[in-house]
Image (cartoon, rainbow, N blue to C red; front, side, top):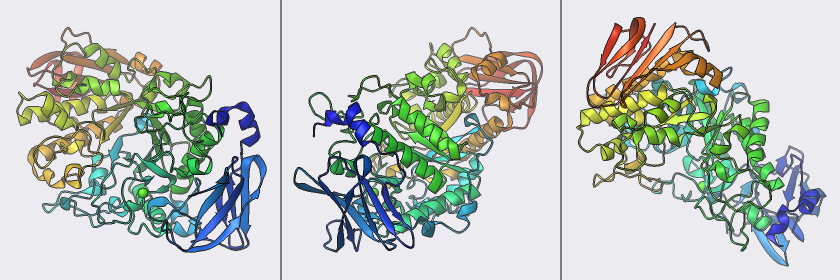
Length: 639
Ligand code: CA
C-alpha cells in the first residue's frame, strides 16, 4: 500500500480505533489480544515458551478474527500471564512477525512480548506510592539529569547494583573517605526530580551481555512502553525489569524525589524492524515525496505523529508510564519533529490523573516531511500554542557558557551579551513569553560538561578561576526565573575525559570510564566546596518565591533590571509581596569579569546570603550603600 494513503481522511475515517484494549489483556479467566493491522490479509498470535527471539519453542499459533476499525482479535479462556508472544500478519501473501507495539513486558532485547500480570510486579506498598510534587508548580522544580549507569558505575560509588535501576535507589552509600554518594548525595543537593536518560527498552546495548561492557545513552527506541532490560538484574525474565524500575521509583518517592523520563517518540532504532512498521508497513514513520523515510532527526526516520493511530499510540504510552510507573514528568526528545496536537493531547491526558506531572520539550526547529497539510510542529518557536509545556533554553545556555567550543560565554567575561542575558534572567528569552516555559541550564548530556567547556574556552585561567566561573554560571541559571536544570555531576565539576586526557562532547557510546561519576573527586576541597555552593544556591531558590514566579506580569511588576553601564556587571532588584515571598526584597548581582567591581545597592541595609565563596538561605553579613564583588562572582542579598 502506498504510504501516502495512510494520511488521507478516507483511511482515517475507516481505520481509526479509539478503544483502550490494544495489546494483551489478561485476567485469571481469560487472555484477550487486539492488534491494529488494517492492511493485513490474515493475522495470528504466536505463543512461545521463552522470550529468546529465534528460538524454536512455539507453543501455539492462534488465528485472529477481523474486528472493527482495522483491528484483529483473539482470545484464550485461560490466564497467559508469563507467556511470551508475537503477532504475525500476512500482507501481499507474505508473513511478517513482530513484537506487540502495545507490549508491556518483553524478553531479552525486546523481540518477543510477554503477557504480564502487572499487579505481580508491584513492590510492597506500591498502591500507596504517589508523586512528591503535589501542590507545586513547574518553577518550583529543580531538575537533575542522569543516566542510570553513570551514578553507580565508578568503583568509588560504593553502590552494589552497579549500572542497574536498583543502584539508583541504594541509600547509605559513601566513598572511602565518607562522602555520601548516589541517592544520598542527590538528596543532600536538594533537587526535586531526577530526570532519567532513556530508560524504556532501547536497542543499542545487547541485554544478553549483563557485564555492562556496552554503554549507550539509549536514544534508539525498540519498545516504548517497557523498561530497558540492561538496567535490570535479569533481562530474560520480562517481569524483573518492571518490578525493579517500580522499586526504584518508589524509593525515590520515599526520599522526596520525583522521576522524569526522557521519552524519544520522534524516531525508532531500526525503521523497518520496528514492530509497528512491520505489522502495518511504514505506518509509524514519515516518508517524503520520493518515498524515502524523512530524517530530520538525523536518526534515519521521523515519527508520523500526525497520523491518528500514531498520535494515539504516543498518548497511550505516556499515560501508561504515568499511571503504571507513577512517573512525575516527561522530557520529550526532539519534539520539533512531533506535532502540537499530539503534545497538547499528551498533557491533557496525563494531567487528568497526574495534575502535577511536568512536561518539557527539547524543542529544536528541524526540517521534516509532514504527511498531512496544516500540521504545526512542537518546536520552541510555537511555545505559545503549547502553554502546558516548557522548553530547553539553548538561548540561555549559549549566552552563559558560549556556543562554540572556544567561545567564551557571558559568565567568562564575554561582552555584548548582557541585554540577552537580562531576558534569560527574567525567564523570557526572545522565543518565550512566560517564565513557566523556560528550562534554564548550563549543561546536559549533549555537549561538553560545564567545567570542560570552561576549560576549553578559558585556557588562560587557572583552575581556581575556572571554578569561580563555573559557580558564577550556576548562580545565574539557578537564581533565574524559569526552571533550573543540571546534568548530574555538574555540582562537583564533572568532566568527561578519555584516558589520554582529551575531553568528550558526545559520550553517547563511550565507556563508563568517560561517563561514570567520579565520586572520589569529593575528597578534593574545591570539588566539595562547589557541591556545597550548589546546595546553597538551591536552598536559597527554594526559600524565595520571588525567584519562582508563575507569570510574565508578576516578573515585569516585581523585577527591576538595574541600569549599570558595564557589559560585565548585571544586577536585579526583586521586590514586593509576590508568590509567597517572605523577604521585602532580594538583590542579585553578577560580576562576570576578572576584576573587582563595585555595585551601588538600592537603599537600605542588605543581608548577604550568597557571595562568590558561600551560598545558602541564611544571612552571614550585611552591606549598605555599595558592595565590592571579587572577580567572577555572584552576590545575593535580602532585605
Ligand atoms: Ca534493550
